[in-house]
Length: 236
Image 1: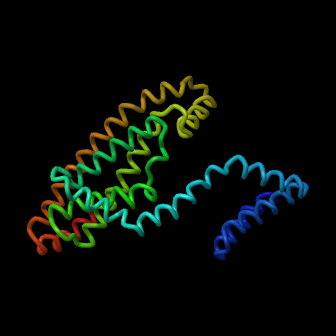
Image 2: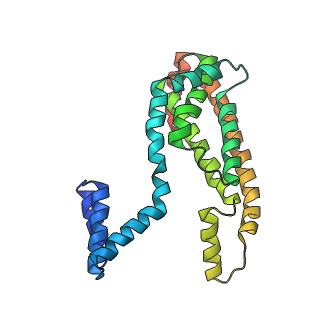
Image 3: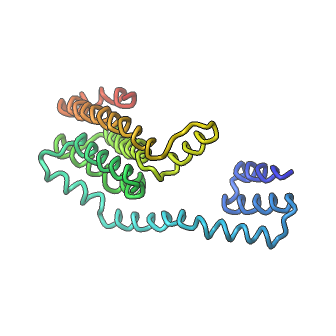
């Protein structure tokens, strides 16, 4: 009977009701079916909010990013990188990959992200480097560059955070190993994650080098080559 709360969540989401209201009602229903008093249910809501309130901090970053974009953050990023002659799309993304993976390995997983870093800063800089070299970019080329910018952030975070001994994934693996009586420590897991992180950086750096070559092939021959490369860009 307690699992009826899960049914409430499914039905509420299917009917597109406000998610906060759905989850709250599901929690109340689950508590009542578990013979909890209204006071205990309210106490658990308050304890959960006090414990996880830091997770709502990201909501405050969204209006800040929107305000910065409205006042020209993306344009300034594109203008800045267009003045650096040695900058290319692949090199910029490769530099961000290194910073993102190194920061994640040190436990600083919140300094980047698709919303707060990739969309307003990294992707415009990568597009600006391509525009400085080849002029105006077709829409499918912009989408291709933005996809690579998002991939760089994801790859750097995913393989870098496992090096940090106090990240949730490492502690989860530690708990699973303990259940099966496999001796290991978070430090050993972090050390064994280093070769993987280094290998991933090398492999993805090669992909970004090939991205520069692909953009050169698409855009250096004019609109005809760019149009013919649209289907290839989707598959790449």
